[in-house]
Length: 345
Image (cartoon, helix red, strand yellow):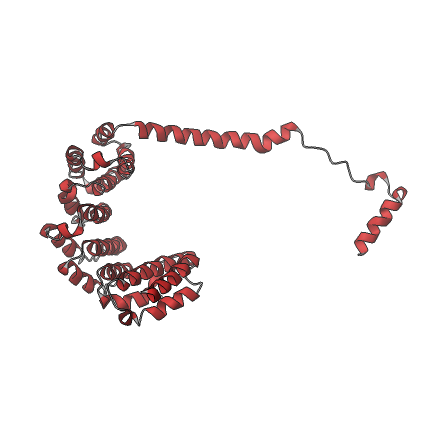
């Protein structure tokens, strides 16, 4: 009120103010200022986007044959061509490529080509990583043996990095070929089970070894079958939390109730094991959200195999997840949806 009345008085008596107290007239911005403020940054950003699009179009314009030929050069750009090919194989119109035995043979020969792991250029490691991804997208079994072999090489960090990608690719390949048909592949099952027991005394390699076991837990869940389920049951007591969590989710996929205690651990908003090993406090909620969402999906899978009475321990935990903000909004919504679906069944 005081400020307003003073302003009115000033308006009534303009002669009381000196020229130095008068505010300057508002001038529209000059064209040069607008150019500096908006046009020049826009030109710079547009140029960056155009360069990126140019390289992207060039890489995408290469045929699969040209891409594979580029892989054979084993130079610093080969891994980028493998990356492009792996993306190409994920597109809906790549059916012919996914069933091309000659392409598979070329990729296998690259993955199996010898290289000095101890002196390996990082680009050579990345090349083999993306070749694994390519083989996983196929719908024919030609790349299976090469991926199994890569998975079992665990002498150093580079081999484990390649091996972990090989396991991820095996999970996709198993799904593409049909899990039931692959349960008869004794070499595949034996390799997954044996490698799931890997341990190390090298502290520098510990995390990578743990992550490899965790990834194998997921692959065993995709594969299924009696022997895979027995191994997953054993992995419920794994010292690495993510390995336990993947084992529990895999067992739930097949209706095995032995995973209940680990699922309760995953749904516990105060569980320290869920965020164990996470260095930054800022990532804790994200990790809790991912783990809880996985657990809710696992409970949903169990509900398709089991009676509601058999889930009596898990339903209160899901209800708690639907009422807390500890896991984030998405997890909260999924928990509520699951409770509604369970009640309908």
